[in-house]
Image 1 (tube, rainbow, N blue to C red):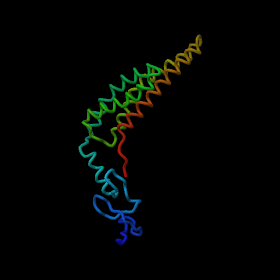
Image 2: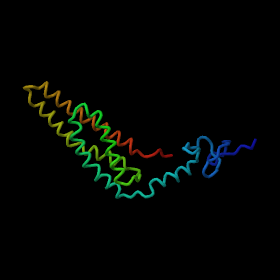
Image 3: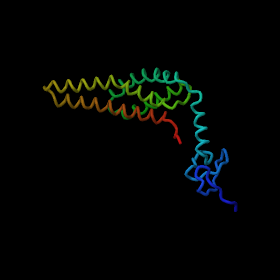
Image 4: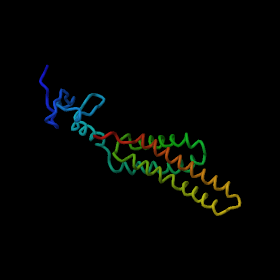
Length: 180
């Protein structure tokens, strides 16, 4: 059997493991599992920089310009459909994320998810504020208070359900890769 090697980052740790890209000896603490084997953190960082190489700040503007109109339409219509918001909210989030990916030609930016999720929230705000006004108005009119308060709360509930579902699925679709 060969002599044990010592980790380049931890000189007191014996190892038999090498990075499959550069060949340096690494211990299990320094090893990062990739689809092609274990690599050192330096090689993983170098590979991750390639993902964002052709992404420019104008792509954030494109993402916002595409997301905002879609989010305004979806944020107004989907919560109004009641129970269907449970199904259509995640579909809207994925749909918006995919349209944005198409618009920026599948380029990856470290904060694209933040721009898209922020625009979805901004797009849902008009309907959310309108529902809040309906709820506040129902509190003033006490002739049929029970019915109006319940309907106002349901409007708010569907708005929040849509918002959580759409933002969650858009984030899941656009989230950045695991960084080391």
